[in-house]
Image (cartoon, rainbow over the protein chains, first blue to last red):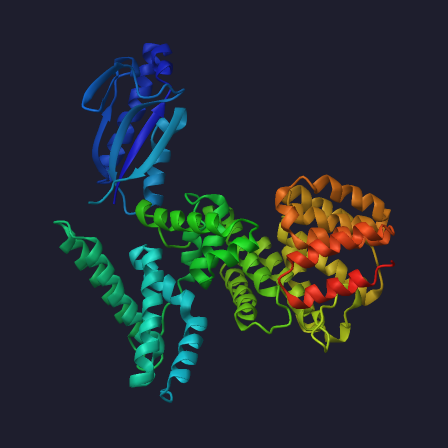
Length: 115
Length: 424
């Protein structure tokens, strides 16, 4: 099965870190991805720019509405994703627990809808 | 083992198989597809087909095998209907092959008696997975393993049938879509998952036990099934004190079953039971289990409840009424569970130590809990305590409500006798 790990973290934390801490933080993510690759679980991933760069679009009654900012203001924001292959939910959950985001934020695990 | 043709015979064979093998068939099929709802539907249709086919063609030599094959075919039909997309073929092929291989393995070496591997425990742990909403784990196990309907489960869990039905559907949907595995958890994650499994077994036991006269076959079976599941868990996990505690608790209660009805079928409360009807072997087994559990030095809800049963039994047998100790056990239990039902029983024990007015005060404090306004034991306890303080009018009213809420006619009669015994 495919699962999406959605990493919700406080985006301000990273900005407040020293360059040394940032390097360490990124290193943890690199190790996580390396482990995913080694296990053959890696499918795709991406890190998102902060929500200050977000633009929201909604079309209603044929009119396109473009808004500056994210869909919702929250304490933790969607900061990145990992698409993984795992045999079952338990395997996906143990990858989520290894993901650095689950240590300084929250990781939401969602199965991919099989069409 | 063929059987005589005829609708009656077919029906009773189907009933017997349903009772004996339902949970086993669900667990076996669901472990392959993870689609519990479809497996339940497929089995329901398979049983319906059996009732049509068996009277015409005679009961099969191996009814379980017949049902397994029929259910498997229905499952493949369901999958075919659902998946009309492009890559449907591959997925469908996989399901078909998986079910085929599983069935072949089950029938292998067994020409007459089908040996379906018992995967009920794995299924129970899937239902009690942390990804499943905590409140629905136990009801889910009851429905999936024992085939109970949502209304019956809702009443055991003090919720509305509609809400319960919806939560069960959502939970099964999550098992399938989120890919919750069907297996027994690793040793280190076992204890935390075990609690939900034990709660469900106890709920099944309590539901079955309501009809202590044993006139309702389905309910008597439910208690037996719960005892079986409780034994299964202790065999698998001999080092889990709470599993031992639960089994001890159920044995204590089961041992007194024959004494809970008199010759006229009337309900008999513990204080008036004929102890010669108690199953002393079972009580001894319960004492042994409880003692064994206590050696692990890890107390929990079920060990305390078993200890309470032990104290009540000792009270009757030895005339030793240590109500102070009983109140202490209820205190500990209430602190662990926070259950209003426990609070009612604690109040009744306090009545023995401090008198009825103190207990009534406690009940008054619980009255704000909405679930209790429809809970018969709350009103019966209130009535009993009010009667003891000679508040006869109020007691009569409380009995009235309790009688109105009770489903079991024997208990209803008992409450009516109590009510009419009140002084005018």
